[in-house]
Image (cartoon, rainbow, N blue to C red; front, side, top):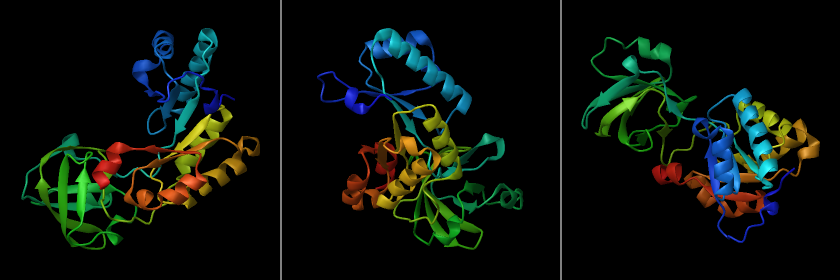
Length: 266
């Protein structure tokens, strides 16, 4: 297995590149490696096991051809908070407008003919964590909403920063602690696949404290004890992670500042 410690160039700053559809050809990978790529990141929020497996094999082949050992970082998705499917795949929102959040597509159908625009949130038990005055950021902070009233399965809110909202865009809830697992069943399946493919490190998303790191380390032990020393990189994306940074650093093998989500959350 290639280790991050095998990176031997003299640059103190290393280059991590996320691979995807635009970089899945042998020529592009070879160009990246000869241009100074140090670590290849595979984002498991996208793609399939089949497509990732093909990319891993291709990357190993090109690494052997060039004589450059390129570590592979598997980035697990974590609990992705998203908007559900919208009518016509998008919805215009204007500042000052009242909207409604619901917790499922089925609930959304109840309000299809209502005057208040309704947005489904693909977030488990979200309304038990919301309160009047909370901010909801959509699409990496491009749109901002303020909660004005919360019920068991819905919440009314006011648009404070408008724009066009599209289906399945990300949701950030600054300052709100959600009681949902940080390591999902999908993550466990992806982790098992990554370990079987010999990935060199695991990045875990939306880490809140050291227990999230320990959970993944225990999962590695259960799935493949021989891979117990696989490095774990904790992604700092939440204010809780910044608060608990000392214990996270003690527990993880490295940290990655996920500037986009952290900027929206803070």
